[in-house]
Length: 301
Image 1: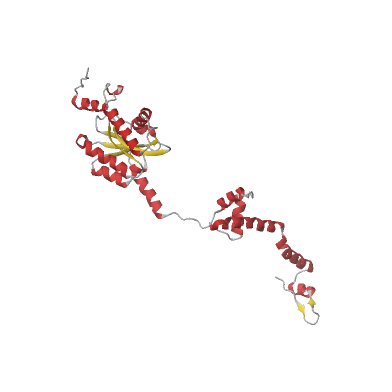
Image 2: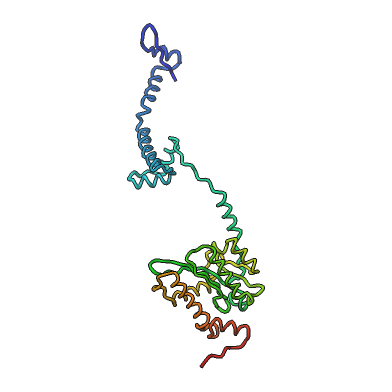
């Protein structure tokens, strides 16, 4: 920068001498001075400062740090629409940065575990080709009751006999009630299961959980999963839930215990009293006996 020279005895700025010493013209010097003086009153600079003040006010609001996208949306909501690129430019220009949240190591680990715990689709929709107690289908559904209340039903269905072998109604979606469904299957039907019996499900979180998969291994059950977002790979189980919801009425249930009673009654009815055309007009329980003995049960007259 050119410095002004004060001539002691004369008491004024000797611009000509200064320009001569610096080797610049007087017009060049004055042009430079004008640019420096007008820098702070440049319309673009003034507008940038005003816009940045709006950005800074939003950024500091409630002492919650915000990124450019959030600031842009809040500005528009406040009646001060501003282009996202402009917000980013001004934040960079005036040194305003929002800390970038780094990926948490445990989330990356969980994602890797989840990807590694998807079981292959061993079933391939061969639902009734292997006889009873080989293909066991499991799933979870919602049950609505009372005034906007909700609970959950986990069940296991024999794809060959269509019998419900185990079920648990739960007020929450915690993992334990899915594990309990497997435990009830073993408690009630362990002697009937085959060496190649498999549990087939969708790719829900419960079925990809380590505890669930370890439990299947402990009981020597193979695991199979539907392809991602493919409901047809577990269609018979989906069909059961659909028919059940058509046939039961939970409108009068005011408590969770009321729902459990309705489900208990329906499961008994479905397995023991409800004949199905595709099961030689037998109930699921009767069809199982028929499939292992070859003796068609005699109906009461």
